[in-house]
Each structure stands twice: as C-alpha cells, then as structure tokens.
Length: 256
Image (cartoon, rainbow, N blue to C red; front, top):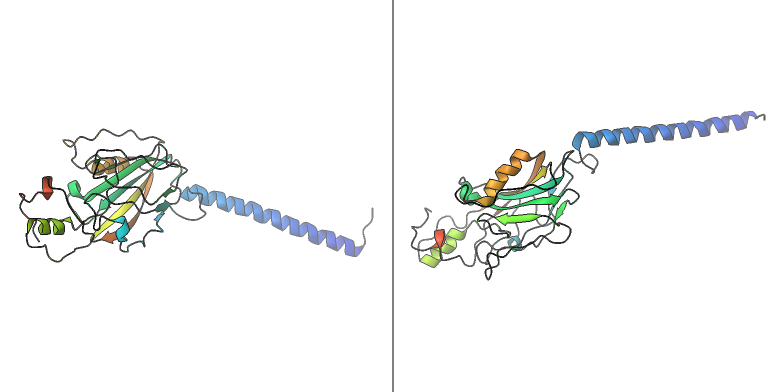
C-alpha cells in the first residue's frame, strides 16, 4: 500500500502522541511506585500523619470531648483520621497523653491497640467510664473488630481529658481554689504503626506500673515502625469527682 505525503504526516503525528502518552504513563507509575516505596502509604505524597474533624490541631478540644461538667474519668472520644503507616504496618495503636504532667502515673489517660491495618479512622463517640458499672468492658464499634482499649487504671473504657479536677476537689472540700483557675494542659494523641496484626500485652499489674496506659505506651513505642501525633489543649473541669483515693478530702490539698 502506498501513502501520500499528508497521510504519512498524519500517521507520524498519531504515533508520536501515542508514544508520548505511553512514556508519560510509565513515568507516572514509576514515580508513584517510588513515592509509595519511600513513604509507605497509599495516599500519594502524604507522610504518616494524624488529623481530626473534631478539633483543630494545636487548638482547644471542644468540651463535648472532655470531662466538662461530667464525672471525672468520663467523656467520649473525638474522631481521629490517619494516613497509612510505613511499609510492614500490620496494625495501629493509639495513646492519649497529658504532656503537661511530668509524672507518668497521672499523665497517660488511655491506650488502644490491635486496630486493623486497613482502618484509618477512630470514630467519635467511644464512651468513657460508666459510673453505674465502672468495671464493664466497652468493645470497639463495628469495623474495628479485634481492637482493644484501656484507661490508666486498667478499665476498658475511654478516659477524656480532665486537667482541672483539682478545682472540683477544692470546691468539694471547701479548700481555696488553685490559682490560676483553670489551667489548660497540653495533650497528644499518638498513633503507632506496629509490625504485627495482634500485639500481646501483659495484664495490668499496678505493682509493675500503676498507669497501664503508660506501660502500654512504652511497649508500643519500642515496637513501632513509625508514629504520628496530633496535639490540643484542654482546661476541662469535671462536674463531680469520686470520694476515694486522691479525690478524698482527707488528703492534703494540692499546691496552687
């Protein structure tokens, strides 16, 4: 078959366009594959990070997600979203930490672990301690099957930020209120990317560590392939506190 000059030029142009398209696809795939190998996630160039539609990073946590006007150690969780962790991530763990407190016995609120690797959201509304049944376990919602959670003293419940409980104790015990009132504390949610689908943790033993969430945080940090954090502040004052332990009026007041 013979081609005239115009047909030949048209065919050459078509082949050139097709060749350029194939070259661009191959380059994009290589670039995309390289980026995924570099940062280990399925979200383009995004690094391992945590965000939340419930609050602004480094801002004030809304009262709905604190102990404000409720019993100490109650509250519900905000929503947390995170990108995929580094290559080899098989599960996630989360820890809530009051970074303003130097004593780990009081600084760690809550830990969750064995969150499936294909889940990248902790939904809002995981409840806190049930005052009527404080020992009751609270399983994670559907979609987080296998996940476990525990608060500082070994109870399987969420423990919302509640930094100004000393204010409520002062009122209850008719002591002078600490000043200034209230004092905001700074907190972080840390999401750990872990290399096993199921992490076996020791049972809570206050003789080993009175704050179980702190003990678990140490374990997660040692195992983690990577971690990401989001911070916030809170000055929440509970509506009531317990009558025992550090909350009893027989104990001396805390320094202002």
